[in-house]
Image 1 (cartoon, helix red, strand yellow):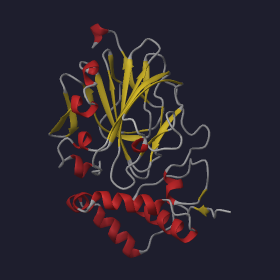
Image 2 (image 1 turned 60 degrees about the vertical axis):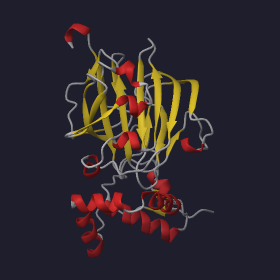
Image 3 (image 1 turned 180 degrees about the vertical axis):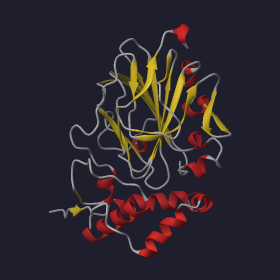
Length: 304
């Protein structure tokens, strides 16, 4: 029988050496150097292996270290015990912990996250971080034309957040494309220093269509450490990178709030919507949102 690990209360105080390391991790240049100058793929493979070890002492220690370095809230998790760090990473939430109530003219946030950037798509490029932009044609492999004149929102999932993402509105997924790539960190220090970061990392494009045919493009982007994307509506067994075909044409109906997949560590989702969708009132860079919060609203053309 697999041993199960009870997570420690959030109030538990970490040892002084661990707190000192956590403080150093808050220094921006040092954070960037440690998470990007070291061999990213080697660290990622090692973390992927370690996170799945179902040994009580290893699981307990790894979960404790994770909670020290990340802002982890497990209060709304469906379980209170996990056999491994990976199981805690990809935890489900208890029923009712997130509510999806976007109306027909709205689109919800597919995941918990921090708004990194948002705005109109006036040309091919959109904002990565202050002073840096990147091409949506490169990001999407040429799928970006349909969204010019529309709007985008970029959501960063930190390592401690809930890692699953959901359908932002009722619709059908009709195309998925996988892009192999690097595994740069996607935190603010790296976004400020690495050009075209999202275009360089492992990612996918997931195209949904609303009932009226309006396309919505979700671009989940993997990051350092576990760096894996699983689309549960497509395949419940294999990671996206393990599939033989890079492009999948499908017809999968999803209702708003239905699970679409998960990241096996913190990462990013870029959402692209065509006009006349615009970011909803109150959508502001730096804000935290939860899965189900309204991100976009459809407006009449003359009001844009």
